[in-house]
Length: 367
Image 1 (cartoon, rainbow, N blue to C red):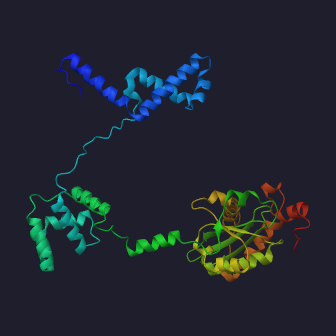
Image 2 (image 1 turned 120 degrees about the vertical axis):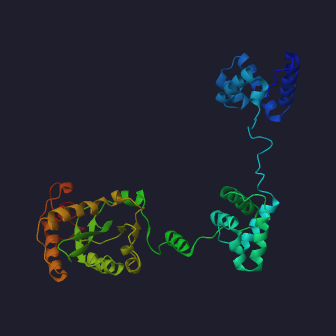
Image 3 (image 1 turned 30 degrees about the vertical axis):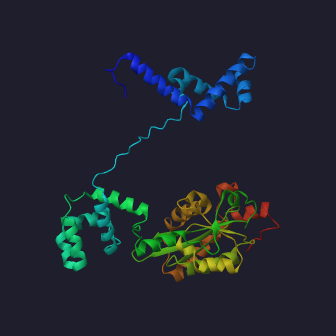
């Protein structure tokens, strides 16, 4: 603050005293000494960069200190914090209110600022709970003014910071959801860029996902699909629900019908790929990789295959029903996809021909 009514000489003298006091600080003396040695080194013939290396301070920092010294004097070289010396404190959060809130939280440990404010606005409700609560009602009525909800919240924060009260615990369902979210899977591991980019041979990585198809009323199909990343060889099966037990059955069929050895599986975080399915992978010692949340692009092979199955198979044909008739029909469609349908990513060749052309020792050509 500058006092304009004082004489100029008095203001200059006070400013000089403040600057001399700041110049005595250790960090200011260090910076003044660094600037002096930097200028001496430059006067001796060194460049600014070489002089900064001799001083041991970056050149940009020295230039910044030099500018501050020219503009503000020694005050510019001080680490002056703008935090006020005397912080504002609410006059309503006194010891009486803190003690009252602490006693209220002993009786209602899960109440937050909103409920406590309501009780303090209606002390007659507390008298219905017995002598202990009636005593609290008397203390509330003795307050000069009922504090606001935000003031109660600040007081509770202060009490929690001091350790006088505990934080409100999560509800049972919230704790259960949090534990479910943080639960580690017993066998599956997170899919990384390294696991996805190192796939070079058929069977090295299979992508699994589910496709839900709705036909006439009552016709609901959940198709499990497994696609090889390299050859796009596909195995499908239809079920009535997307459960882990169905996924475990589908895994057995995938391992039996793939014309090569399956060495790893990649799935999303769906519940159908947990429980029995994960236990089956663990029994077979088959690596299982789980994709990060909301990343269908990392499962692109099977997602693209689902587009073909949705528009080229289900939308273009009158598929039979029930499942006992649909499954043989899907097996025929799977044969067409693997041995007849040209695949653009494979140079307009079916997956079976691509396997025989590029991996004749790895793959067999089933009839």
